[in-house]
Image (cartoon, rainbow, N blue to C red; front, side):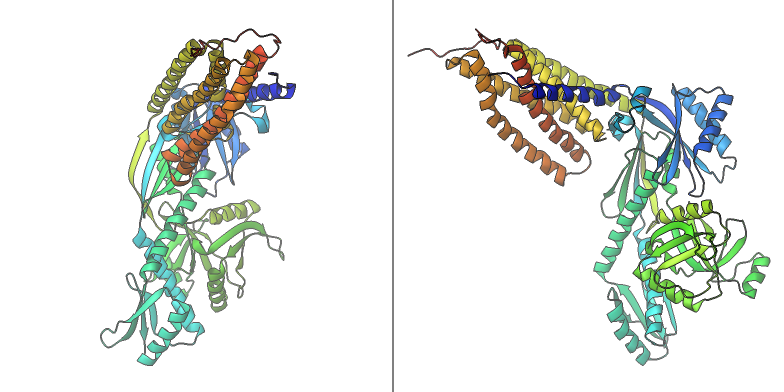
Length: 626
């Protein structure tokens, strides 16, 4: 009656073994480490650099626990672990000095980090390698930034783009216009007469519905002023916020920071949390790598070349340098930005077989690029990248003919490696609006360790208190319940580790809550068994009916609690979601351990006895007969 088939016992055993295997990495802790990544998208981090790093550390007699190269997205990262923080700091200073010989122009980011201290045999499991849970900022330590987005800058960029759209639209429709320029937060158009102005209003209201036009006659000039509608302003600001968040994700994820938190706060702020990063200066450097991409025309006229030779910059032009260090004069007018770039992939020119970069523009960018290349054949077009406030000409190819369809090819004197680097640099994304850090905090690893210790001890002593009470009250079935409770915690930690979830202080609170909820199921089962015994059932029947008839109550109570957890998961954010994830998983594991696991123990202990006189489940009080 109370015997499980062999496959059920094996299922419980396999679950316990897997739970133990995937929970173990969480008890090994973390080792101090140094992380090396590229400070520029054009700098390579590969196996050769790892060999050089190991030679440098060996020469300086700084031992490592392990050093390895890891591919993160499209960028590589080198990580080296050390026995203590003293060796970590020595290695960081040495590698920073060795790899970045020019302080003002660093090629590599050498940052302090923390890595799992799992043994080598776990790494040997490959795809099945057990990994510890990620720890949140409050448990692991790290850096916290609150970024303020310059929404006026986003609107200015949008008006610059709209000014170019207005010029193109009026030219295509053969509407005469004297001048089109951005004036503050508006687009100002100048006409020769009122007929041209009225004709332009009719065309622009149809083609550019985001702009609202009003007459702006000044000093006898026939002018028209266009401003974004309130709904369009809101949409521009939302797009800027979303694009900045996406760009930050792309950059930080490729730099190998484990489980960064990048989320919106309010209408114009972004919260960035980098767990495990101890160096605030290097963390700022990571954020500062977010770049803006622009395409402008190069001025190679004799007057511009004369001014360049005289080391002066004419009005309307700006001076930048290309990758070879040669000066280039480009016009201030921005033709396209990174917003119009959908993809960039390295490849080869089909005719010359030279290395090239293939760009894919969106529909708006394709139309603008077609018109610009058609009107500027034989001239040069510069692709500029702005990183850390400094602009650099990535490439400045000569326009050979009209380019339509949004498929653009950049080719010239570049190697296949340079083409791949350029594609990566262009593909990484651009900020839609500038940002500034308005708040920063550092959570030290010692504070995180203290939070972990307090959370661990509170959960441990809660478990001990429950175990003592349940054993004293239910005797052997209390022992079964305690073992089931331990298995529940084991499975919960294993599932969190397999999902690579991020554990925070609210998550530890959810684990403690799970202990109380899990023992409720065992109390229901044990009391049901007692009730069956009071009603005159045999011990074997009492065990069978106790588990069977308590199941419905256990399912209902856990299901209602699960609904609340799912609501927290769906509508909550930040710490609330972290609590909800652990809470929901704990409900599932508690049902398995209480109903399946504890019954397997009871069946294994009592199921082999055909004639069972009694069971150890504490005092069974029978009602007095009337």
